[in-house]
Length: 169
Image (cartoon, rainbow, N blue to C red; front, side, top):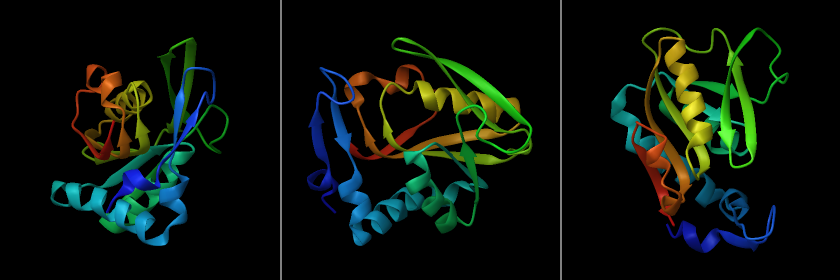
């Protein structure tokens, strides 16, 4: 499927100089939405995935479909104060400052094989923070499945797990 034709460029969003990749064209097309999640799941199908983790908010859209397809649990990773129970957190660097993510303290069990799913992989900083939380709980971060990877931002410099993406820029 030609996913790239369903992606719209939004210049100067959210700030001047940034070209935002709007993936809603994939999600509003039922076949593209379902097929994209299936292709990510198929890539990792033989890797004994027990959980799929996704960071809010757009990672949830594809991540939950991938988890269901793999018969795996789904782990929402959220901004501070959004989860209703005890959490662990990880702070990470952004271009201008820091941010923090949280997951429940019992989200990952020792020995879990966790696939991270996101809509778009840019620098890899957010995903690297999720990997650290997974490992702190005794899980193994198996890889990243994404709709889009911005290869020119070199996410592999921050991630030590394989990244599979349907579209590369």
